[in-house]
Image (tube, rainbow, N blue to C red):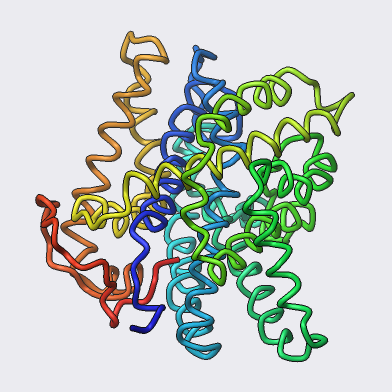
Length: 390
């Protein structure tokens, strides 16, 4: 069997979950005021701010671990040409297409919130939007393209590395991964980058790539890329989950309580330890609980790309619509989250899953349907026609 045709259900579900967590994060940001979001509630609540810190510390690094794993799967299983073609179709084209659709829409919404609806047309006609150009929440695709380019170039150049170099790298990687203190070892590769950002993963400011951000995501992406070659060690993640959970608590306290402005190296230490403990915890839990085929998880994995790409105008629109309701901000969070996810899933099923958009995002058309009960005997094989998702 071609290894590139094996479907890693647990890792695919984990990758999708990291994208879906972003929807929760952005809903809460609007009602906590703790972060950058087009809508900030006039009466925010900080009750859920601790969840923002936890999610922000590891969500994107964990996503890039999975991206590295599946990138290596494509490179090794289908070759460089197929790797490049697949990433162009599944990452570059969606990035360009959906940004061109969403940026004018979000610009109009932001201008309406800031200056009133009567200023939208003048802002578009004056060219003032040029100063606001931003990749929006799709910035992760821009950096993903850079990481795939780096991964592909290094993999191609590895043919000319000194004899035995890659073997030694894999020996060291395997040794480190099998230590019970592995999260702390791999956190060392992320520490200085986070300290340079005062202990927090920085949000991008525009299209121009920012080296500190790129350097922060190279270690998790590389970790995932190397993990594919050493995938026989995946069961290792099922060990020590309880210990890592216990250790993540003091790491979170250090990250949350130490001021980055005066103690960036200490705050960064708490951040990267929390990040890597959570990466190991999540990977282990998904491998324990989601390794078997499940139509529901498969459906959500397919839908997650669309849900995350399109959630921004839906979430902001709902937040603005609920503004007049005499409810506390904390009560609006589950309402907006539930309605937004429902709208996005229905739109995926009706407008994406069986259309050319579905081909663009999922690699092929699927019949429109809600998930059904999983047959327990379904083989864990990916359709050979369906490239692994981004």
